[in-house]
Length: 118
Image (cartoon, rainbow, N blue to C red; front, side, top):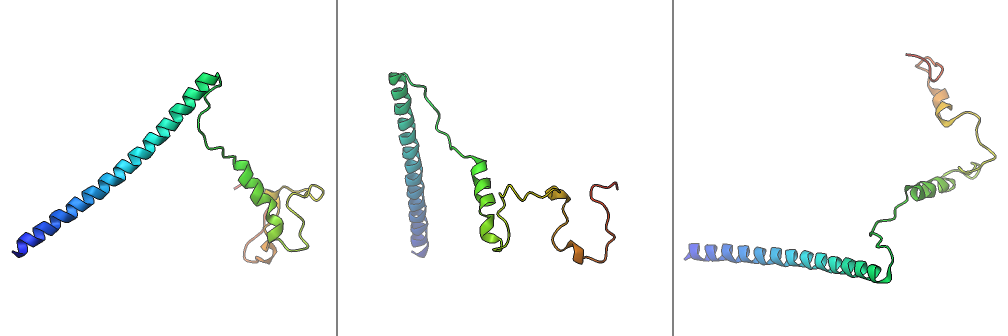
């Protein structure tokens, strides 16, 4: 009797998991059909009106994120520091040639000119 109940419980769990998987698959399939229908109607409307059918695309401009971060530098700097985009206070030395902050405190190495040979 115990084996019968265990087998029945296993069968019900499998049936429940199969039903959940089927519902999940059908919901994804329905969402895909709705998107395909919307895309088809959009294409049909573009053809009827004589307009070009533009593809759906994510309009992501990486420069926007860079500009947001670059311009927000004044929030993290101290009150006496200039804003990063200040055109009047551009250093003469390029950024990759300037010494790092705190480099003058290092005493266990011999300094050399940047960009020198091996």
